[in-house]
Length: 170
Ligand SMILES: Cc1cc2nc3c(=O)[nH]c(=O)nc-3n(C[C@H](O)[C@H](O)[C@H](O)COP(=O)(O)O)c2cc1C
Image (cartoon, rainbow, N blue to C red; front, side):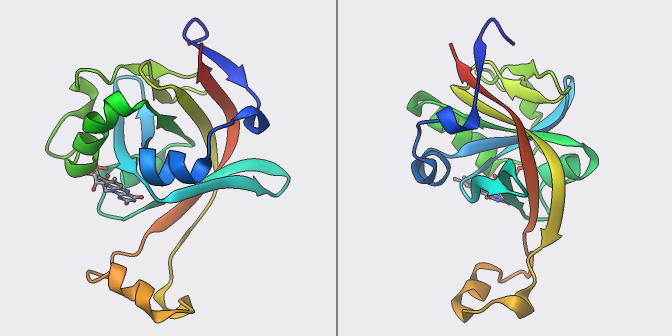
């Protein structure tokens, strides 16, 4: 890991997070080397909570990644260059239930010190320890157009991860 990536402080991430998450997209990965799954996400956020640097991801319950994140104490967020957009689209339109995502050429799993998995090809990775989760509750929406996002009532579960390490490609 440390031959490809250098540890950086979260406050030294210079990317614009709105672009990074919302437009460039990320892979949420959970599991262990040899048994992991990842999915593309473009909803999420990062900041500071409970005096910790944190990231929040929003995962619908039918995703296979949901099961992995549920079971594991850690997850990672991986960010890539534009040349990987096609692979991110693949991971965002296919479930690990139908496709073994560990075998996708161009996405080489990389064990992280916490025992989780990131990717050799990523340019930035956040290693997160799950510290909280909850479910979106429709009765709490303060504006009513959000409900339209959930015609199947598959409300996201959100997971808050403490960012225990940020890694930047050397
Ligand atoms: C650009 C993009 C962004 C996405 N963002 C999310 C998201 O934030 N949360 C979510 O639950 N699904 C999101 N998805 C859908 C999942 O990536 C998709 O359903 C994926 O196939 C789930 O894979 P899995 O079943 O292997 O976990 C997104 C898909 C794309 C293409």
